[in-house]
View 1 (tube, rainbow, N blue to C red):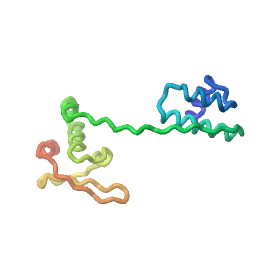
View 2: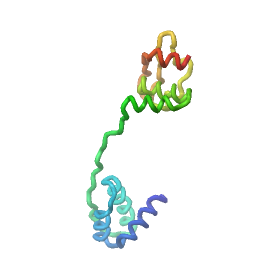
View 3: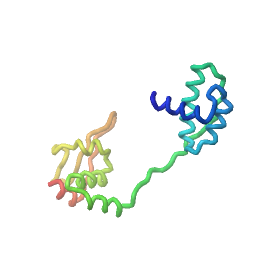
Amino acid sequence: MVSRVKLLAGLAKKAHLLDPESVKEAIATLDVTEARKENIVCVYGGFRRQNNVPFNPPRYHRVERLPFIPPESEVDQLKAGLGGKTTTFLQTIKETAGPPGKVWRLRWLDLDLAGQTITIAPEKNSNPRQFRVSTKLVSMMG
C-alpha cells in the first residue's frame, strides 16, 4: 500500500494524475525497466478506477532475463573465504542443487555418510530426492 502511494506521488510530480495522456507520456519517458513501467500502469489503473478517470493503458512487457550463474572457480573462491558451517552449507547446495531452506533443515537422519548420500525432504506434492555426494563433502560433515 505504501509503495503504491509513493509511486503515485512520484508520478504526480511528472504528470497531472487526472489527465491520462500526460500520465502515459510521463510513463513512456521514465528511465526504468519495462517491468517497472508495467507496475506503474497497474497502480495508476487502480487510481483511475477509484476516481472514474477514463484510461486506455499502454502495454508493457517484461523482459525475462537469465539468472546470473557464477563460474565454479568464483564459487570455490567464495567458499574458501568463509567459515566451516557456511562452507559446508554452500558445498551441499552446490552438489545437490537443493533449495537453501531444505539444505539448512537437513537432519542427521537425512545423511548416510557410509553410503555418501544425502536425502532432501520433498517440497509440496513432490517426492524426496537422494543425491550421491563427494568424499570431500562427507569429510566436511563428519
